Length: 145
Image (cartoon, rainbow, N blue to C red; front, side, top):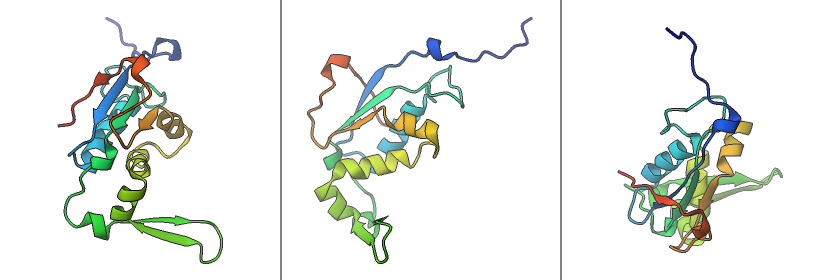
C-alpha cells in the first residue's frame, strides 16, 4: 500500500486549447468556466501551487448578456493615481466601446491575486467578434452550461 500523495511536476503538465463562444451567454457564467479552465480545476492533476491550467480563447464577447439592470447599474472604476483621477464607466458603455476589457476584468477577478494568477491570465485570449488568430492550435470547443 502506497501512502504518498501524487503531485504533478512542471514537466508533466499537458496544456490544451479550448474555445468558448460567449454569444447569448451570461457574462458571469462564461467567466467562471474560463477561470476554471485557466486554473486547471477540471483536471484530476490539479495542484494549488502550480499553473496546470489550459489556454482559453473566448469569441463573440461583444454579444454577451448581463442579467437584471446590470447594464446601467454596474459601474467599472479606474483611477489614474492623480487627485480627481477617478473615471467611472457603466457596463453598457464598456460593452459598446471595449467588450474584451469587460470579459478580461470578469475572468481575471476570479483568478488568484498573485504572481500565479498573472501567469494564468497570460493564457487567456479574448475577441469581440467570431474571428480569432489561434486556428493553428486546433482549439476544442468547450460548452458553457
